[in-house]
Image (cartoon, rainbow, N blue to C red; front, side):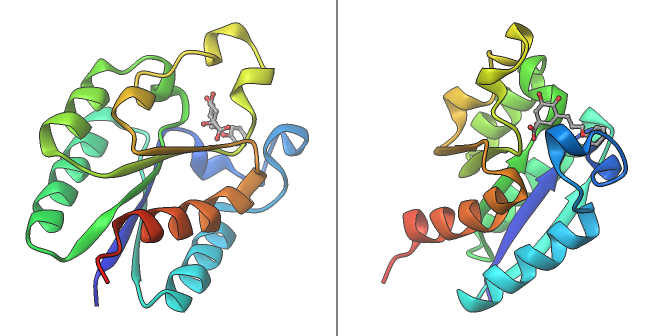
Length: 151
Ligand code: CA2
């Protein structure tokens, strides 16, 4: 069974513990379960990961690129957290590993502080899901599936 990588960047392990007015009250473990439910309906496995470390995330993106080339993975749904606004290295990793990425943000970053308006990830993302709360995760999985399905 092919899989979808769901990748979460820094501080997303705090989801559901603080700032419910911005990010809601669902935990990251609950989000993982939502992703499993959605992917299951589409006949996909979920590889759900979170890290606070840029290098680790880069390594996982490279791994995803290899899995895509082997036909084992359809791509990644990626919430890069604050790396969105800072990381040329993650931009380069996605481009270099040729990973099909759906960039996802729980909040509407464009309605927030100006420093959240620019994304280094968007130019190398295939699609973007912004501002749907954690519901964006299953939406992004569905979108990635639709964009990459061959039959
Ligand atoms: O809206 C999103 O999903 C973000 O990617 C979340 C990032 C933020 O830096 C981006 O601008 C937008 C922050 C993730 C941290 O999440 C927390 C959750 C609960 C409590 C504290 C942080």
